Length: 166
Image 1: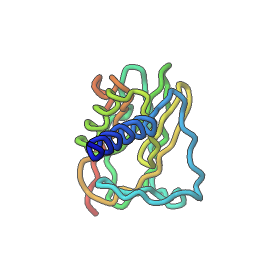
Image 2: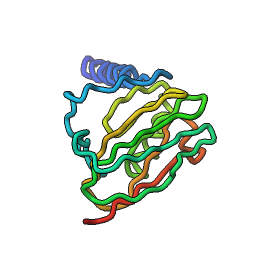
Image 3: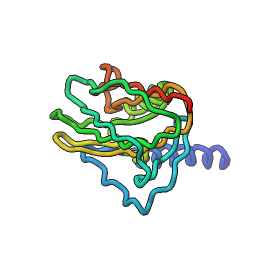
Image 4: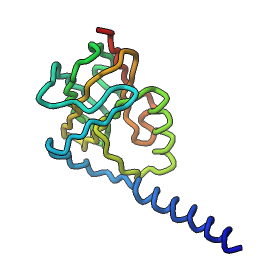
């Protein structure tokens, strides 16, 4: 009985800690200082060095649930500075990833709408504000970006990045 109770308590504590850690408010997250940049290696690239940006891309996020531009092509190895402007009246975010990862994350956001997350491949932008992502695309292929605020991804707020081989 003690083992079952201890196991149940562990599951409850883990669920509570996860929900608390994933809290997400409407306020934009503060960017980490450049000295804190630790490359986050992912299936779609890694944290870019701001001193080695090879291209800057401006992305507009609107309340029409669209990114403009919604498609772009980059070369493998490019370090891109995404400048995401929220021209709408509600919070938007830009999250890089594979379509599968974005869809899974969007489902989590439905369950935990106040989820707080801060990774180098995402930026949360308050209405009228601008945020940045610096990302190095180390692998060729097709990747995506989406707004994972509940309902936005499902409404079509998704873009595509084609990374061309060297």
